[in-house]
Each structure stands twice: as structure tokens, then as C-alpha cells.
Length: 154
Image (tube, rainbow, N blue to C red; front, side):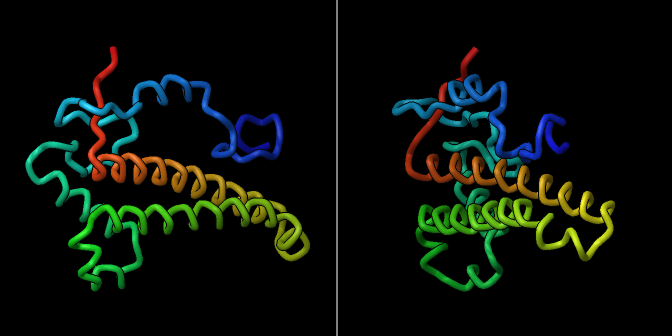
């Protein structure tokens, strides 16, 4: 019913038919060129290697985390640790969307009308897809902060 209409599996759980292409295109290279961003790189974050790119990455990562994280100097001084914590926070949001989607029918089925339940499932599917894409983007930023660079593929 959700996703492609075949079953109840949310879209973020289904492999993309382009997954192999994206995986090849985003493969990190030891000696890649500076200023190249792989597919899935977050908007608003400069490509790795450009002047000030780490500042844009840090600002984006802080936006993903609870506001209290901004008060910890260790996260400003060590962007790789900030990336790790942002990844964990986004992964938890993805897990929550998966859990919510999986339990919505049994927990809400008798308490809300069917149309409301369908809307809730669509919301979980949308938010889960968004969290999965954000998790991939955080991993790319984390890899770049660790020194990985990418080569463009034709």
C-alpha cells in the first residue's frame, strides 16, 4: 500500500534501483580532488577542500543536533566528534520512524479513524525517508572530515 503499492514495506526500507550507481559514484578515494562533492552531499555545505568548507559542515551538523550540543566546546574543536554525534542522533530518529511505522496499526488502529491512521503511516514513511537521506549525508560529511575525497565519475 505504501511505497510502490506491492506491500506494507516503507519506501526507505526498499533498495533503490539506482543504489549500485550511487554507491559507485560516492565511493571515497584516498587521493581524490579537492572541492568535489559526491551525490547525496548536503545542500548548504561547501564541498570538501574548499576554503571554509569545515565551517559550513559544522554549522549544518549542529543544526541536526539538539540545541544544547552547541554549548559544548569539545564539539566545536573536534568536528569529527560532532559528526559522530549528529550521525547517532539522526540514526535514532530513523529508528524511531521505523518503530513508529511498524507499531502504528496495532497501537492506533482501534483509537483513530482509518484515514487518520493512513495519514500517520504516510507521515512516518516521509520522515523515515528524510532521516535515511540525512543519515547518508552525515556519513559523507563525516568521511570528508576524516580526510576522504571523491573523484567525479562520468
